[in-house]
Image 1 (cartoon, helix red, strand yellow):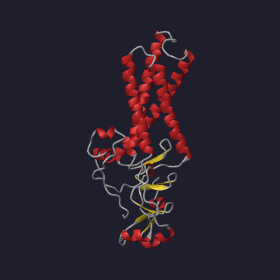
Image 2 (cartoon, one colour):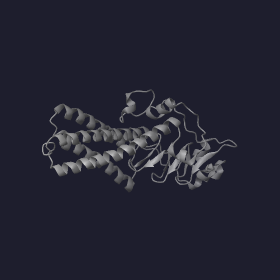
Image 3 (cartoon, one colour):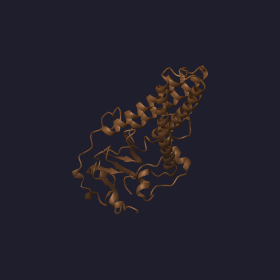
Image 4 (cartoon, one colour):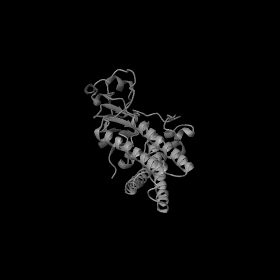
Length: 298
């Protein structure tokens, strides 16, 4: 069922009805915050678990499979590839967690700001009664971040942050690199089992045979689980970017009021303009190019 827009947002047609006197003035512009970080217990625990699982995979890959290997070339190539992808995955996770996803200034529903919009008869502005801010189009309120987020897709506890217009690139890279290291670890586990069956189990690992089997089975289970999960998330995010429709907009079946662009243009809006190797780097901040400005008045 299509949810009426009036039920989702507090809509008023005149500035006087917004009751701006109930909103506290926004804080004065000071030095920008050094880092965006959400103090949510569940999100922090999930983020720590994510890093611990990656470090566990590092431990098993290096100390159980690569160091005991007789082939130096095999160990160097696979060790360099796995550690490089793991580093990019954790860097992407850090950027997705500590980047402002596109928070709307809190408490900007003041009389002065509303008057600066120069409302005309029949024009509509959107107000969020929870954070007392005037919403731009396509913004939604997050109950965990306690802010309205521009182009909010969803709140992900695994990165302890919302996925919005400013950090969606890093979230997509995080899911992609986790899927790649999961696939790589599964392939190495399969080769290691074959190697151990052909050789003496006491020579294929520095650990005892039972400990080696348990560590490999746990890594195999972790790799398979995260391969499926992150692959689905990666595909969902790419589809959302190409159709230029966030997860919340798809769930609420909101009416499209924004300009329809090509899939390639939508990708450049998220990953940067123009196309470059920086699309794959979590250290490259995307240049959104000629992205459509967000409107407070419709």
